[in-house]
Length: 289
Ligand SMILES: O=c1ccn([C@@H]2O[C@H](COP(=O)(O)O)[C@@H](O)[C@H]2O)c(=O)[nH]1
Image 1 (cartoon, rainbow, N blue to C red):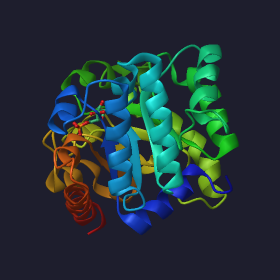
Image 2: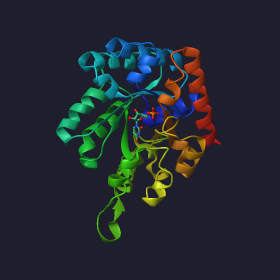
Image 3: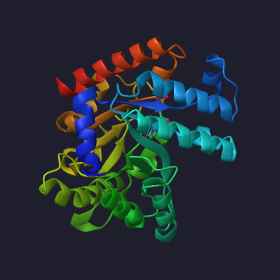
Image 4: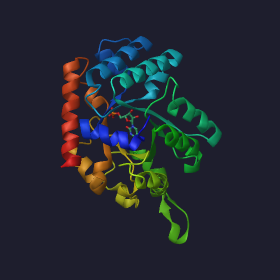
């Protein structure tokens, strides 16, 4: 891969708009689509989404949990969906929220961020709650291979606040956990951006549902100089107004993410495409206007 993830994502959003379509094969959606709740159903579901929106949206984001439900066959289906998205020229983000001590994190990095791995994606969601430093092997792999990370920062669920808004440090150095995560990501991105990339490889997950939490926690999203993955659009209730209000100055870094909001239009490919187009237009108006 020649360009870094931040640069590739910036190019993809310039071409297709700031939307990522989540591939979340919920049991209920599989039933609505007339597919069995087994590995063959997952595979068909994922491939139909890629067929409908591949080459038309900036990225797709398979949710690993729904594939893991069906064990090794489910993971094999995820591998096929990733390969199909790659073949369609669409960026892939595996939403697996991995995080562990450094040596185990290195194994996760090998699985999701190394050339030739069957689960390799363009980016991976990771959890910083074993300490941001525990993510270093994944940061190194992302920098080496031109891939990216999205680190959980201010997640879309209300329970996230009890950890992410908590204060750490002492004296003048007191800051929220979310602000600390953002500052650590900014430090990795700074040299990459200084070298000319539009965005660095370490992004954050910041829910479109968090209202004014970035300001309340002192989290400087624009300063991260990395992409901001914004789940919560559609089924969780956020739309254009929320995207514009949450991200303010950082709005050009945002990749809005919608799963059920698009997937409920399926299984018809034209209907899926139309739902993705409408969600893209709404996000573009909120974030690029
Ligand atoms: O803060 C977060 C982080 C990840 N997610 C994931 O995004 C999708 C949302 O699905 P919708 O159907 O669009 O609600 C899902 O895979 C979550 O695990 C999130 O929602 N919030």
